Image (cartoon, rainbow, N blue to C red; front, side, top):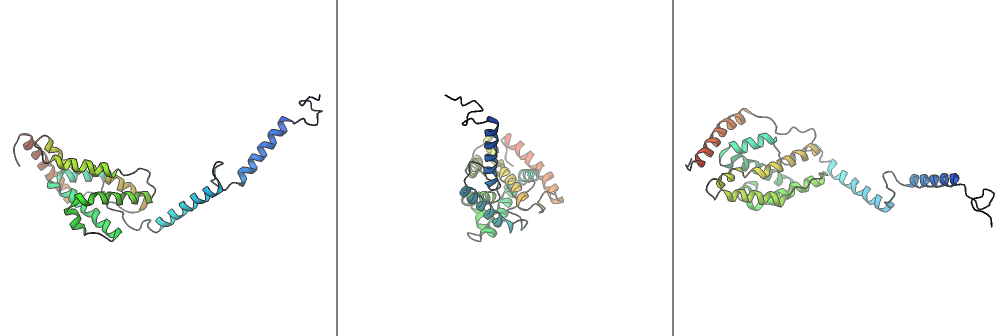
Length: 228
């Protein structure tokens, strides 16, 4: 019986030639694939994904540098002004600015003035609208709307308790620090040439100095059981 490994045998296959044939066939198959198409991805799947990316790019091309998306503030500036402005004034002002922007983008619902007066009903829809904007621009991190609202409500509830737990009510703005950072990232993607609110004015410095002193004194008197 002829040995299949014998080169004289008609059925003998040279391993080197066979490997060359396999490599050539593989290269030919790869060349037939569309650019960016993986070996495990069918042509229909690749076309669907490509058209989805193209549709997404067409949606945002007109909005690039078309205007600020909500209104973020420099992180340190936001924190300082929220702490130093008494009666949560800057936090309320920041929310009002976001409601105004939301009204302009959606063109429906109550006026921003009404929304900021009953924020418990409108903060969650506001955060969801911000999250939807981020998804449109491909931000990978999701905005944890439910957690932010929960922490915010808990901090508001702390204001009903006596010290030391009542002091936590001063920091109701804390969950919005994450939201503000999210908006900064969103606007850097959507409006790379837009100047954001990152500079301090003279009024800001006055508020920080005077408000900071008020904040420190208020904390001291509250811990001592006094009222201010």
